[in-house]
Image 1 (tube, rainbow, N blue to C red):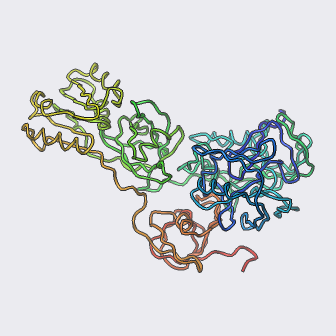
Image 2 (tube, rainbow, N blue to C red):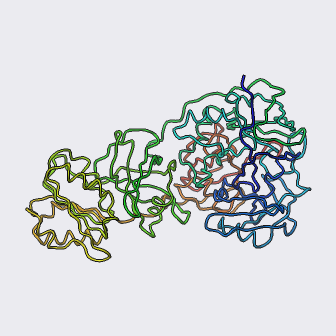
Image 3 (spheres, rainbow, N blue to C red):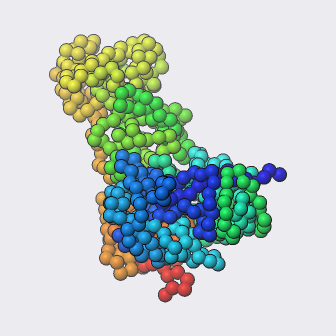
Length: 600
């Protein structure tokens, strides 16, 4: 039997900020000595975590030799915090705690990062939260230490279409050499000088769906969704890893053997099948690879996560909901320039179009593994099955539907294609166009490099043989399309032979535009859009609600439905209750919190 050894060690100077790997950690009664010494709170003193502020995951926090805390984030000057400024009373999951607050400069730095009032606080000797049989003096969720098993992650990844790394789970100690989920039965262990007692499994929340590198949430809700299929208890709590309390402090180092002292009966979890996809819902695309397309442009290959074949006619487009550079979410449409595997895999060829937020994100920020929401496929800017004698006119990014057209033509044709672009280096898919000219007899591709001014003119169209009998397809910026259509008609082209598509941004919203008033207890009503999950809308309205999984499994956000019509994506199995994380308003709603056991 292989030994169980320490494979990785981590501590997290600031709760929800980036972790620090270490060859050795000093474990105190409150856990690793440098773990979660600091926490971010709002103006009222309630904790702010990456559940609601994913930007925190991008914060690099470290301790300097003199004990000062240094925080850094992209495009922001580093800040060194020497000592707390004053005492503060804060709350962590409703538990009141004593803490020390950083100075005004530190609070301003954090507020600017999160774009909301925020304060940075440090735990003190008086910071104490009850847990198990003792008190815990840290800002961790439950207990001093979180232990994960590398084999358990391997078992989870074997079920996922896209593997995740252990940093999604933010453990302090990662053990190697055990069998998958052996930690379910561990009761006590000794690692190095340290003796630990396992107190409970770790209940996983929506934070596991946030990519710690990009800070973006996985729209497939993985790995939490697959974990819920085989690691959820009867109450819907989803488990991965175990919490432990410190029986004997000391040092733990990489490579230390973990001696499992006591083992109990391993609990069993029911296994269920995934829910069938909802009809007419947006589908999830996951980025599989990215390739250069031209100067300032990329070819992005996306796979439909449901792996269903999709009917796509060359030239059609797809509408995407993706993050913008300003942190908002926007809807944009892009032509599918190529597809394969019966439409399961689609390529979008996108150029940076400042200030077009989504295009900039696609070119500059999207990385392999990202997910976006997609609707469609749409559009009638397509070639007929019997390919006619044609004239293609394109400018800038308007080349993309023609890249798709050329993929569908396998033999001879009679096509003139004139493309307008500022320079050769900016032409998206130029190698494909050149190969098509070599491959297809009758395809004549020519270009006009126009610089910052000029475009295809009347003399270019007049030189096309049999212009009036050709089908004409025009795609590009709106002014280009209008100009080309006017010239073609002036040269005798028939209106019914002209097909156009221009790039006009659709409305920038994922919401429906229909809002309903939602009343919760005695709080003033909040307007929530019918396309927005109630939990998200209520939070935006200033209400603090408990939540964990946010996929309708754990039931921690459950509310009483007093009056109103509500569309529910997940059942609570209790009459007159809803899960706001997966429910949508369909009328004015009156809701009430459900008292916990022992509360009135």
